[in-house]
Length: 459
Image 1 (cartoon, helix red, strand yellow):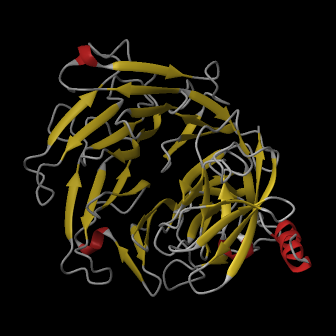
Image 2: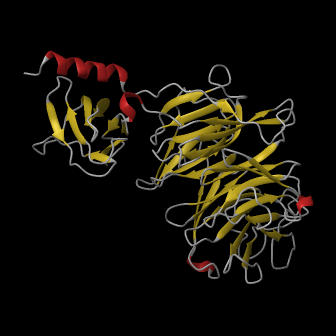
Image 3: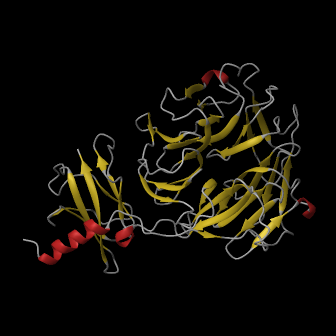
């Protein structure tokens, strides 16, 4: 029989575990003049350095201790205005894509934020029929595992400009040997494949397929092989009839678990390739209807910026925390960019004052700190009709003793000591299936601390 102390610890764990610790957002002034803040259009993270592209004030970088501002007058950035998209590639180069007249700039800052004298800049221009961009409106960018770049283009004049552009950088130190391919929905052989000529989002999934999000007609998934051989390609179109909450696709995010998250201007959904199925997020706690930005952190939580605040979700689409300007420190509720620092765990968000057209840079230090000793189970609850994989115990340090207890405090299973994350296959110590119910996870850490959290199993 368990002691009263053990039972009490179990009850304390049940009451305290499973919720996120309350935290507030901070504002970080952009540059050295808090009274004169630039309007920011794009954001990306390089390590722990935040990079921002502005509407009229060039490119900004912040490493936690100071700012650098790159302007055309410095001799590197080719154009100060309309940096629609900010992207950091696998080489650490910073890309700013924009509208006409100069389509993109790429910065190799040589790893020195505040020293501009060693910067290397590369300018890409709008040159139809030439060796660089064939479209002058670049609103999105992504990269393959091999480092190839894809650009999503908007042809608002319907002038048969390209839909997506593909770049292979054979040598990043020069643009002389770049290889470009340009794909148009109005010219053979592409006229029957691309659904539209207004692309707002592009992403590459874990299988290497290109996801193409359109402004009003859903999305395409392009599984391509040899880009010079159209015959081996497979196209799949998705819209509201497939499970999307809206055909107005605004943003993509490919999470670590392979799910593709799709933010539309009327709802959020994700596609799980493991079961070839769409899930629409219908959690009533999700703020707003317009999904404007998506990223995920090292723990697997998905962060979404909306027109009414920020939400953090478990990978199954359950909202675990929401933040608004009312009481959580956000400077504004229209959050049109979000980026995760996976080194420090900080969450960065841009909030827009729609009336004043000004931007505030917000940061949530450390992201969400899970309750009960920074340990939690995922997915929680675990459901047999949704998940066919194990339940992970996230946050238990390497070398911990992790034990699953039932509601009475009886031991159900001791998990193998290993590196995190620890996994429970929903079996007891005899190899039999653990039944439906609430379980307590006891984590004895290498430093002697013992923490608890709860998980639910539903068959």
